[in-house]
Amino acid sequence: MSDEAASKRAILNHSSVIDARTLADSHKRLGELIRPGMHVLDIGCGTGAITRGIAEITGPEGRVVGIDNNPEWIANARSRTQGISGISFEVGNVYDLQLDQQFDIVTSARVLQWLSHPYAAIEQMVKRVRSGGKLLILDYNHHRIEWSPPIPRSMQSFYDAFLRWRSDTGMDNEIADHLTMLLMETW
Image (cartoon, rainbow, N blue to C red; front, side, top):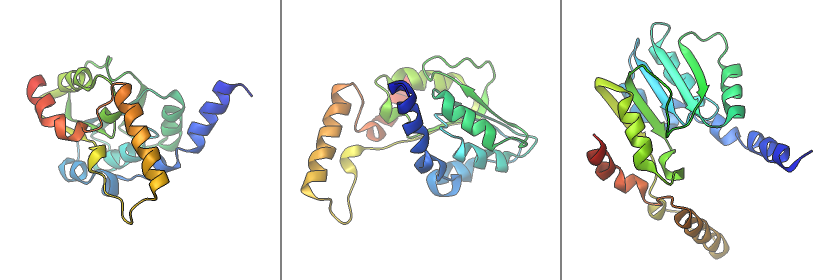
């Protein structure tokens, strides 16, 4: 097996954390806003676990589109949602969304923290929100994470190195606290 194939297999095998997410426990505010018949765009949908929950609420008269840049996760999402009307999945790039339609809600959860250019991604998202619609972003400030019980010193050293790596590659470890400013600049 090639290194690339082994990496892809490892990613798919570790998608269980993503698969276990639900709309009710992983994106509560979004669940409160969705209504039957809405059109919703879920950017960074992963394997579609939350996207499926969105489609269950919007129903057959709604439309839900999930986009992720991982083709294997999109294939997984498609296979898990066969037979559910009003839901589709596309491989896509958050910096270049190839969608003409606009949506009642555009959402992304835990996505911007992984991007070195979140402003450009937000610009794309804003373009897909219809007049009167909503943009809902859920993300982290990694410096505010509280560990209970406290993690061992070795784990803290690993986490600190992880945050330095993220910062060195251009990712914003405090993106959640910067969203208001980014949205004000974009919208």
